[in-house]
Image (spheres, rainbow, N blue to C red):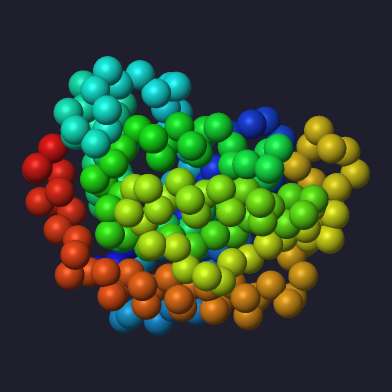
Length: 203
């Protein structure tokens, strides 16, 4: 079974990422045959609720002292790939996402990632940064990505409120292509990844 996490990167009040993640999940599951052996699950960083990185030992050592870190490691170890749903904040990803990545090291290795971003410029600059960060923890990033415009793919009347996600139809084939690339890379990297149970036991 291939397991893909759809990661909601924004944790702030009035965020829009949860709507986007549900759309990705709905499209992914509706276009995946039940016997394909692929499972998608939403991982919301607001629910994970990690504090600012507080591990005394670098993540590369793998000696996690805190229970919240071990829970996070176990969760990430259970997935083979990721779709990161992220906004762009000041030419970068949200601090919550960078913090969540920095908590771990080996748990990210030899997995694949795809991106669905949103913002005034489609969130593309956040993804540029995210690709570099993920490369450092040995995550392979697919080329295709979905870039959603804040004022073209959302109906917003009050910037303090999330508004309604109304994606343009042309994003659907892009999302389908992105997910197809992701699954292909996840399958190609499978021989490099230890089984999830083994990875957890090694911690």
